[in-house]
Image (cartoon, rainbow, N blue to C red; front, top):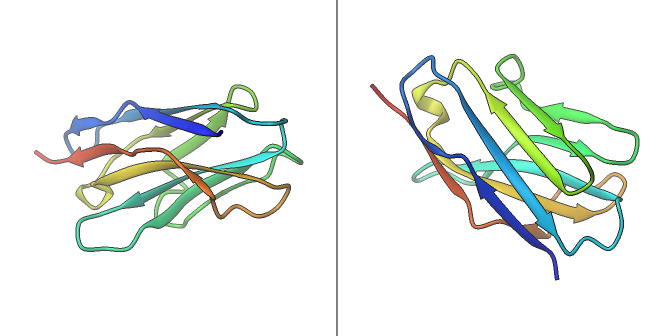
Length: 119
């Protein structure tokens, strides 16, 4: 059974930084796409970034690509460094995973961690 646990959320002022982490367990091998999604109040959950373990492809959505950095220490640990945070970044951030070489849409989710950007 795959389990994803996020940590690192909190309250930060505009322009500040936060680092989110996701620890996975239960992976059957190293071929998982891991991703970050977020959901703001009243909005749908949206992709933030993903990292493919096969081939190393990383993709960011346009709104974060110059400010956020995804990294994977190994096949099961992932982090998201978020810099120059804006109020629009306020959301619950979710770690996702899928056993695939190319499909980044998760079929496993963490419980989410709240990020609030406010002065």
